[in-house]
Image (cartoon, rainbow, N blue to C red; front, side, top):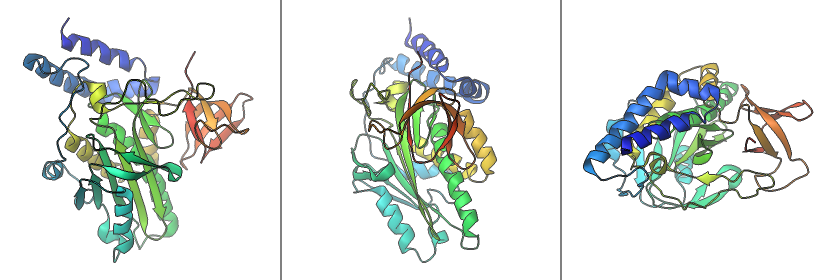
Length: 338
Protein backbone atom coordinates (compact mmCIF):
# COMPACT_ATOMS: atom_id res chain seq x y z
CA UNK A 1 0.00 0.00 0.00
CA UNK A 2 1.33 3.49 -0.79
CA UNK A 3 2.28 6.06 1.83
CA UNK A 4 -0.56 8.24 0.56
CA UNK A 5 -3.13 5.50 1.14
CA UNK A 6 -1.75 4.78 4.60
CA UNK A 7 -1.96 8.45 5.51
CA UNK A 8 -5.48 8.76 4.11
CA UNK A 9 -6.63 5.89 6.32
CA UNK A 10 -4.97 7.54 9.32
CA UNK A 11 -6.69 10.89 8.69
CA UNK A 12 -10.10 9.23 8.44
CA UNK A 13 -9.38 7.36 11.69
CA UNK A 14 -8.45 10.54 13.50
CA UNK A 15 -11.62 12.26 12.35
CA UNK A 16 -13.65 9.47 13.90
CA UNK A 17 -12.15 10.25 17.33
CA UNK A 18 -13.43 13.82 17.47
CA UNK A 19 -16.61 14.72 19.30
CA UNK A 20 -19.58 15.20 17.00
CA UNK A 21 -19.53 19.01 16.87
CA UNK A 22 -15.83 19.22 16.13
CA UNK A 23 -16.00 16.51 13.49
CA UNK A 24 -18.87 18.22 11.69
CA UNK A 25 -17.07 21.53 11.77
CA UNK A 26 -13.87 20.06 10.34
CA UNK A 27 -15.56 18.05 7.59
CA UNK A 28 -18.07 20.75 6.77
CA UNK A 29 -15.81 23.76 6.47
CA UNK A 30 -12.15 22.84 6.73
CA UNK A 31 -11.88 19.06 6.40
CA UNK A 32 -11.41 19.05 2.64
CA UNK A 33 -8.72 21.72 2.79
CA UNK A 34 -6.97 19.84 5.59
CA UNK A 35 -6.93 16.57 3.67
CA UNK A 36 -5.76 18.19 0.43
CA UNK A 37 -2.93 19.95 2.26
CA UNK A 38 -1.71 16.80 4.01
CA UNK A 39 -2.12 14.56 0.97
CA UNK A 40 -0.32 17.01 -1.30
CA UNK A 41 2.69 17.03 1.01
CA UNK A 42 2.62 13.25 1.37
CA UNK A 43 2.40 12.63 -2.35
CA UNK A 44 5.37 14.92 -2.90
CA UNK A 45 7.33 13.10 -0.19
CA UNK A 46 6.52 9.72 -1.69
CA UNK A 47 7.73 10.77 -5.15
CA UNK A 48 10.95 12.14 -3.70
CA UNK A 49 11.37 9.13 -1.40
CA UNK A 50 12.33 11.46 1.46
CA UNK A 51 9.58 10.93 4.04
CA UNK A 52 7.84 7.83 5.31
CA UNK A 53 4.51 7.75 7.14
CA UNK A 54 6.15 8.16 10.54
CA UNK A 55 9.45 9.84 9.64
CA UNK A 56 9.73 12.87 11.93
CA UNK A 57 13.38 13.69 11.33
CA UNK A 58 13.49 17.41 10.59
CA UNK A 59 16.03 20.06 9.81
CA UNK A 60 15.58 22.74 12.46
CA UNK A 61 16.36 25.98 10.66
CA UNK A 62 16.24 29.37 12.35
CA UNK A 63 13.02 31.35 12.14
CA UNK A 64 12.78 33.55 9.02
CA UNK A 65 11.28 36.85 10.17
CA UNK A 66 11.04 38.21 6.62
CA UNK A 67 9.11 35.17 5.41
CA UNK A 68 6.81 35.41 8.43
CA UNK A 69 6.02 39.09 7.83
CA UNK A 70 5.33 38.46 4.15
CA UNK A 71 2.49 36.13 5.20
CA UNK A 72 0.85 38.58 7.60
CA UNK A 73 -2.38 40.36 6.74
CA UNK A 74 -2.74 41.94 10.18
CA UNK A 75 -2.88 45.64 10.95
CA UNK A 76 -0.91 45.48 14.19
CA UNK A 77 -0.17 41.98 15.50
CA UNK A 78 3.35 40.87 14.60
CA UNK A 79 4.25 44.00 12.62
CA UNK A 80 6.76 45.04 15.29
CA UNK A 81 8.75 41.88 15.94
CA UNK A 82 11.64 41.04 18.27
CA UNK A 83 13.52 37.86 17.38
CA UNK A 84 16.10 36.26 19.70
CA UNK A 85 18.07 33.03 19.79
CA UNK A 86 17.82 32.62 23.57
CA UNK A 87 15.99 34.51 26.33
CA UNK A 88 14.92 33.95 29.90
CA UNK A 89 11.28 34.44 28.92
CA UNK A 90 9.47 36.01 25.96
CA UNK A 91 6.67 36.97 28.36
CA UNK A 92 9.13 39.01 30.40
CA UNK A 93 10.32 40.90 27.31
CA UNK A 94 6.77 41.59 26.11
CA UNK A 95 5.81 42.74 29.60
CA UNK A 96 8.73 45.19 29.63
CA UNK A 97 7.71 46.53 26.23
CA UNK A 98 4.23 47.30 27.55
CA UNK A 99 5.31 48.74 30.90
CA UNK A 100 8.02 50.97 29.42
CA UNK A 101 5.90 52.37 26.59
CA UNK A 102 4.85 56.02 26.69
CA UNK A 103 1.35 54.85 25.81
CA UNK A 104 0.00 51.31 25.70
CA UNK A 105 -1.67 51.70 22.26
CA UNK A 106 1.70 52.61 20.73
CA UNK A 107 2.96 49.04 21.35
CA UNK A 108 -0.28 47.23 20.56
CA UNK A 109 0.57 44.03 18.68
CA UNK A 110 4.30 44.14 19.39
CA UNK A 111 5.61 40.58 19.46
CA UNK A 112 8.60 38.55 20.69
CA UNK A 113 9.80 35.15 19.51
CA UNK A 114 12.80 33.18 20.72
CA UNK A 115 14.31 29.90 19.60
CA UNK A 116 14.88 28.97 23.24
CA UNK A 117 13.58 30.03 26.67
CA UNK A 118 15.47 29.30 29.87
CA UNK A 119 12.55 30.11 32.18
CA UNK A 120 9.31 30.07 30.24
CA UNK A 121 6.24 31.29 32.13
CA UNK A 122 3.13 29.14 32.51
CA UNK A 123 -0.17 29.08 34.34
CA UNK A 124 -0.03 29.53 38.13
CA UNK A 125 3.53 30.83 37.92
CA UNK A 126 4.99 27.57 36.67
CA UNK A 127 8.24 27.83 34.76
CA UNK A 128 10.05 25.48 32.43
CA UNK A 129 12.95 25.35 30.01
CA UNK A 130 11.87 25.57 26.37
CA UNK A 131 14.62 24.01 24.27
CA UNK A 132 15.74 25.12 20.82
CA UNK A 133 14.05 22.26 18.98
CA UNK A 134 12.10 24.01 16.23
CA UNK A 135 9.05 25.11 18.23
CA UNK A 136 7.23 28.43 18.65
CA UNK A 137 7.81 30.38 21.88
CA UNK A 138 5.91 33.59 21.28
CA UNK A 139 4.58 36.49 23.34
CA UNK A 140 2.82 39.69 22.37
CA UNK A 141 1.17 42.84 23.71
CA UNK A 142 -2.57 43.44 23.39
CA UNK A 143 -3.05 46.93 24.72
CA UNK A 144 -6.00 48.61 26.33
CA UNK A 145 -7.64 51.57 24.63
CA UNK A 146 -7.17 54.55 26.95
CA UNK A 147 -10.51 55.99 25.86
CA UNK A 148 -12.49 52.87 26.75
CA UNK A 149 -13.93 52.30 30.22
CA UNK A 150 -12.10 49.70 32.31
CA UNK A 151 -15.09 47.35 32.29
CA UNK A 152 -14.92 47.24 28.49
CA UNK A 153 -11.23 46.39 28.66
CA UNK A 154 -11.94 43.39 30.90
CA UNK A 155 -14.57 42.20 28.42
CA UNK A 156 -11.93 42.48 25.70
CA UNK A 157 -9.50 40.47 27.86
CA UNK A 158 -12.09 37.69 28.28
CA UNK A 159 -12.59 37.55 24.52
CA UNK A 160 -8.82 37.48 24.00
CA UNK A 161 -8.48 34.51 26.36
CA UNK A 162 -10.96 32.55 24.23
CA UNK A 163 -9.67 33.77 20.89
CA UNK A 164 -6.05 32.70 21.39
CA UNK A 165 -7.13 29.06 21.78
CA UNK A 166 -9.29 29.24 18.66
CA UNK A 167 -6.53 30.97 16.66
CA UNK A 168 -4.03 28.30 17.71
CA UNK A 169 -6.30 25.48 16.50
CA UNK A 170 -6.86 27.27 13.19
CA UNK A 171 -3.10 27.83 12.80
CA UNK A 172 -2.37 24.12 13.37
CA UNK A 173 -5.21 22.42 11.54
CA UNK A 174 -3.39 22.04 8.22
CA UNK A 175 -1.03 19.64 10.00
CA UNK A 176 -3.26 17.92 12.54
CA UNK A 177 -6.87 17.58 13.67
CA UNK A 178 -6.97 19.25 17.07
CA UNK A 179 -9.19 21.17 19.47
CA UNK A 180 -9.22 23.30 22.60
CA UNK A 181 -8.92 21.88 26.08
CA UNK A 182 -10.01 24.36 28.77
CA UNK A 183 -8.51 26.44 30.22
CA UNK A 184 -5.41 27.08 28.12
CA UNK A 185 -4.34 24.10 25.99
CA UNK A 186 -4.68 22.74 22.48
CA UNK A 187 -4.72 18.95 22.16
CA UNK A 188 -4.86 16.49 19.32
CA UNK A 189 -8.08 14.54 18.88
CA UNK A 190 -6.32 11.55 20.45
CA UNK A 191 -5.48 13.51 23.61
CA UNK A 192 -1.88 14.68 23.13
CA UNK A 193 -0.81 18.18 24.09
CA UNK A 194 0.32 20.44 21.24
CA UNK A 195 0.14 23.90 22.74
CA UNK A 196 -0.31 25.94 25.90
CA UNK A 197 -1.02 29.63 26.37
CA UNK A 198 -1.36 32.24 29.07
CA UNK A 199 -2.84 35.74 29.37
CA UNK A 200 -1.56 38.17 32.00
CA UNK A 201 -3.90 41.13 32.49
CA UNK A 202 -2.35 44.44 33.54
CA UNK A 203 -5.10 46.93 34.53
CA UNK A 204 -5.00 50.30 32.75
CA UNK A 205 -2.34 48.94 30.39
CA UNK A 206 -3.39 45.81 28.53
CA UNK A 207 -2.58 42.12 28.27
CA UNK A 208 0.64 40.20 27.76
CA UNK A 209 -0.03 36.90 26.01
CA UNK A 210 2.29 33.90 25.80
CA UNK A 211 1.82 31.05 23.33
CA UNK A 212 3.89 27.89 23.03
CA UNK A 213 3.32 25.52 20.11
CA UNK A 214 5.18 22.23 19.64
CA UNK A 215 6.00 22.41 15.95
CA UNK A 216 9.04 20.35 14.96
CA UNK A 217 10.22 18.77 18.20
CA UNK A 218 10.25 14.98 18.48
CA UNK A 219 9.30 13.69 21.94
CA UNK A 220 10.19 10.38 23.51
CA UNK A 221 7.47 7.75 23.11
CA UNK A 222 6.89 7.40 26.85
CA UNK A 223 7.11 10.91 28.27
CA UNK A 224 3.81 11.85 29.94
CA UNK A 225 3.24 15.39 31.19
CA UNK A 226 0.93 14.00 33.90
CA UNK A 227 1.30 10.48 35.27
CA UNK A 228 -1.18 9.69 38.01
CA UNK A 229 -3.31 6.81 36.78
CA UNK A 230 -5.61 6.91 39.82
CA UNK A 231 -6.83 10.44 39.22
CA UNK A 232 -5.79 11.63 35.78
CA UNK A 233 -5.28 10.42 32.27
CA UNK A 234 -1.56 10.65 31.43
CA UNK A 235 -1.05 13.49 28.94
CA UNK A 236 1.53 12.84 26.25
CA UNK A 237 3.15 15.75 24.42
CA UNK A 238 3.21 15.77 20.64
CA UNK A 239 4.13 18.16 17.84
CA UNK A 240 2.81 19.13 14.43
CA UNK A 241 5.73 17.31 12.81
CA UNK A 242 5.09 14.12 14.77
CA UNK A 243 1.38 14.16 13.91
CA UNK A 244 1.76 15.04 10.23
CA UNK A 245 4.88 12.99 9.57
CA UNK A 246 6.86 15.84 8.04
CA UNK A 247 8.53 19.11 8.93
CA UNK A 248 6.12 22.02 9.38
CA UNK A 249 6.83 25.61 8.39
CA UNK A 250 6.89 27.66 11.59
CA UNK A 251 6.57 30.96 9.75
CA UNK A 252 3.29 29.84 8.20
CA UNK A 253 1.92 28.55 11.50
CA UNK A 254 2.71 31.77 13.38
CA UNK A 255 1.43 34.02 10.58
CA UNK A 256 -1.85 32.07 10.50
CA UNK A 257 -2.15 32.43 14.25
CA UNK A 258 -1.68 36.21 14.06
CA UNK A 259 -4.05 36.61 11.11
CA UNK A 260 -6.79 34.53 12.73
CA UNK A 261 -6.41 36.18 16.13
CA UNK A 262 -6.76 39.71 14.80
CA UNK A 263 -9.83 38.63 12.82
CA UNK A 264 -11.38 36.95 15.85
CA UNK A 265 -10.82 40.00 18.03
CA UNK A 266 -12.91 41.99 15.58
CA UNK A 267 -15.90 39.71 16.25
CA UNK A 268 -18.35 39.80 19.13
CA UNK A 269 -17.59 37.59 22.13
CA UNK A 270 -20.67 35.55 21.20
CA UNK A 271 -19.18 34.76 17.78
CA UNK A 272 -15.86 33.78 19.34
CA UNK A 273 -17.68 31.54 21.83
CA UNK A 274 -19.41 29.77 18.94
CA UNK A 275 -16.04 28.97 17.34
CA UNK A 276 -14.59 27.90 20.70
CA UNK A 277 -17.52 25.57 21.42
CA UNK A 278 -17.15 23.94 18.00
CA UNK A 279 -13.56 23.06 18.93
CA UNK A 280 -14.14 21.98 22.57
CA UNK A 281 -12.61 18.53 23.11
CA UNK A 282 -13.92 18.17 26.67
CA UNK A 283 -17.63 18.81 26.16
CA UNK A 284 -19.70 15.71 26.87
CA UNK A 285 -16.77 13.76 28.28
CA UNK A 286 -16.13 12.46 31.78
CA UNK A 287 -13.50 14.60 33.46
CA UNK A 288 -11.65 14.80 36.74
CA UNK A 289 -11.64 18.21 38.45
CA UNK A 290 -8.61 19.11 40.54
CA UNK A 291 -9.17 21.77 43.18
CA UNK A 292 -5.45 22.61 43.32
CA UNK A 293 -3.43 21.22 40.42
CA UNK A 294 -3.41 18.24 38.08
CA UNK A 295 -1.98 15.23 39.91
CA UNK A 296 -2.04 17.02 43.29
CA UNK A 297 -4.71 15.27 45.34
CA UNK A 298 -7.16 17.25 47.45
CA UNK A 299 -10.39 16.49 49.31
CA UNK A 300 -12.12 18.91 46.93
CA UNK A 301 -11.33 16.82 43.81
CA UNK A 302 -14.21 15.09 42.05
CA UNK A 303 -15.39 13.45 38.81
CA UNK A 304 -17.93 15.15 36.57
CA UNK A 305 -19.28 15.51 33.05
CA UNK A 306 -18.00 18.47 31.02
CA UNK A 307 -20.89 20.70 29.90
CA UNK A 308 -19.07 23.51 28.11
CA UNK A 309 -17.63 27.00 28.41
CA UNK A 310 -19.75 29.94 29.59
CA UNK A 311 -19.69 33.55 28.31
CA UNK A 312 -17.57 34.73 31.26
CA UNK A 313 -14.83 32.22 30.40
CA UNK A 314 -15.64 29.82 33.22
CA UNK A 315 -16.31 26.16 32.46
CA UNK A 316 -19.42 24.30 33.56
CA UNK A 317 -19.37 20.69 34.71
CA UNK A 318 -22.09 18.43 36.13
CA UNK A 319 -21.26 16.36 39.19
CA UNK A 320 -22.54 12.82 39.68
CA UNK A 321 -25.37 14.11 41.91
CA UNK A 322 -26.58 16.39 39.10
CA UNK A 323 -25.22 19.65 40.56
CA UNK A 324 -23.75 22.00 37.97
CA UNK A 325 -20.55 23.78 38.96
CA UNK A 326 -18.78 26.68 37.28
CA UNK A 327 -15.00 26.32 37.26
CA UNK A 328 -12.65 29.31 37.25
CA UNK A 329 -9.28 28.39 38.78
CA UNK A 330 -9.56 24.62 39.00
CA UNK A 331 -7.72 22.33 36.62
CA UNK A 332 -9.38 19.55 34.67
CA UNK A 333 -8.14 16.20 33.36
CA UNK A 334 -10.09 14.36 30.69
CA UNK A 335 -10.90 10.83 31.84
CA UNK A 336 -10.79 7.93 29.36
CA UNK A 337 -14.13 6.73 28.03
CA UNK A 338 -14.77 3.13 28.98
